[in-house]
Image (cartoon, rainbow, N blue to C red):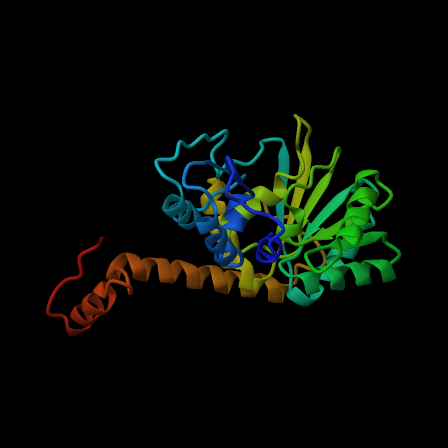
Length: 292
């Protein structure tokens, strides 16, 4: 749109409504600069509407700088997950995720599967590996042409393709009837994104299943997700890829997170300087550290 404006083909002077769909992603750092270039071109007298399944606090604050006295309409809490979605997490080494995924997809009860990766490169890589394993799969992301994305989505919707691998941005707006499973091949670093991802299944009163793969480095992401949704995600134990090394690494990471949490509660925040002041006092023994 900016390109067309610069070429003089379109004008926004007579615009009545300014709508941002998937507002959380559009206002994320990858797009905010473009949005800021568009805003001065809009008429001051207009109606602005933002739509999004999730709205993290930092993005909501950013939206507040663009909107004037906005009215908020919330259908369900951002942290809610559909009760009919059966959730489970697999602890697995990063290098073994592909093997676990291939094993799971051998089960024919996984009729229609949407797999999430964090990167475009990751989506392509998983698609290639599954193709070699004779599992019909296609990737969809921003580097694909519009024609390629539309073809992959059409094939997935009519169940010609059983497996679709997508990045978060590409998956926005995907609404597929009878999507049986969502697999988080990589956990998102933004907990609200998890809610959005698994919400692709279990729609219109149907049940659904969501699997998440978690390596040792992703344990903090899992902790944030469970805090947001207000419950522990059951661990799918007993799989052959949950080795002793994985269990030990996960346990170590969990313990490190716990210790860090205790330290923050004891010494305060590093941002406001209270951590260093209280730590110094505690070490010198001159003053007891007050808990916040």
